[in-house]
Image (tube, rainbow, N blue to C red; front, side, top):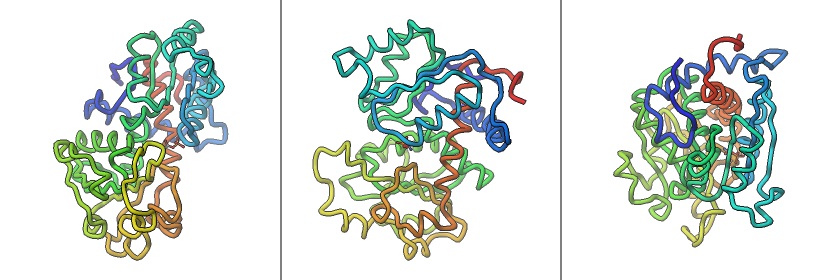
Length: 311
Ligand code: CP
């Protein structure tokens, strides 16, 4: 199994073959979490540091669980309790953590490029767990794993990504992955939340939710990333929800076999209604489940994994 990368900074750096290698390996790692004893010795003696400068439920927990299921030692550091609050730079923080010889640092930061700065300067592997509105590569990979698990293929699938495209690192990483894998993407939302560069990325743009979802295999709903807005992009949440929120009534216009994804956290009743979140088309919790397997896979591949110790 060949994975010639020290770090995972973005989908941009991966080839189609890299992505397929990750997805194929994930099938085995998914099985480990189904067992009564959910632990293998693969990364025994290795150290993983989770360094999170932004809130997280799914990503941080799943990196911790992934590391522990592979028998690594996992240390969690929050930005708010780190010495960055006393004026230390992120790079000095990195040098000091490096001095303790970790094998992987997983980093989430509100500033795009922070994982790249650490990767250029530190010897250990860096995994980008989300950098501002730039990329969230492990989310896109777990989304690909979820779609492939349910649709059995990725090539040729049609996808609508709906919502706050401008501020979404999830949208960017998914578009990059879907383009590489031969999927057809339409982004849907108000003009104020869709950047002009979208068409140059080879995706279609729509401002009409119902017509955009009519013939797609996958609908991916996104939260309004209010923490990254510095001005109002629509008149009111109610109007946004009426035009771009997905509910059971609108979903009737989509295909019978459509699947619905959302990276979370969901804002129930804003971009997606409770009956759709909890309904038959929703794979939102399957995404979370695949998040553990994808992160186990990436730790394994980045540390030069062999088939030994994964059985
Ligand atoms: N999808 C995602 O990144 O969720 P968290 O912010 O909870 O990690």
